[in-house]
Picture 1 (cartoon, one colour):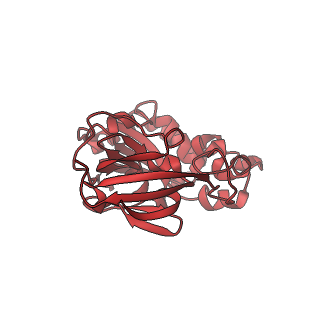
Picture 2 (picture 1 turned 90 degrees about the vertical axis):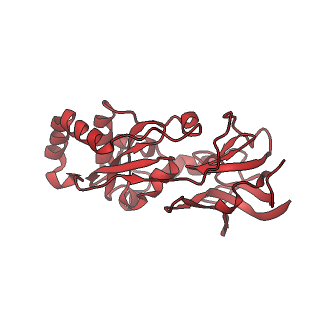
Picture 3 (picture 1 turned 180 degrees about the horizontal axis):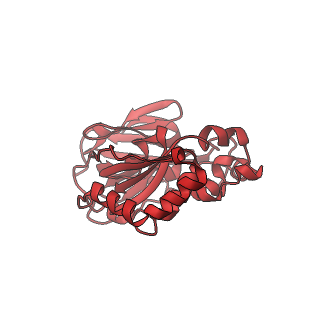
Length: 281
């Protein structure tokens, strides 16, 4: 085996191309992943986790890469990150007001994506199209631009009464989702939720929630030679090795002939990554 790199793992860097171009991030080092498809790849957990924020060694990773004290004090680990409508910045109780001002009091996009089926989601405008790639979407369409994260959460809460807001990761790794007409679905949502959107515009101002009627559907293709016959997850906490022939990459998942692994789940884990030139026989 040839070692490609070792260090503290972060979620894979992804660049929109045809197909998406991926790179492992191990500390300050980047290792291209696309050339490894079809080769025998090994990920070895070296037994240490260092908090991605403070560097403290921790036995358990909280909120994907943090130690317990940081998970308790950082705004990026607060409940409102998963449930934006629960933002408490205006109540004066934000854990880190300056962080909230930078990342939450900024333009967000409400979107439709087709990964394991159609879902609604939100992301900072600066995270388009990275967010869609990380979710393994094969189609995506921004439908509204919203002034703050909390307001986008209110919009998402309204729309998910009509469309799902979760991805079925097992279905995601079994094949590409059947293409759908996201433009038509957008119009259906605008029609069925129109009064609710108007109420939010009246509450926060017309300019705070703007339909993106000129936006076009983005098609996304991933570097996949084949989908795994069976979806079995590697668990580095129980077995420190994940290896096999790399069949493809989708979202933040590596798909092997022996199982799948969600790279983002192991943020801050110390890993060594190795490969052989040819696929395993």
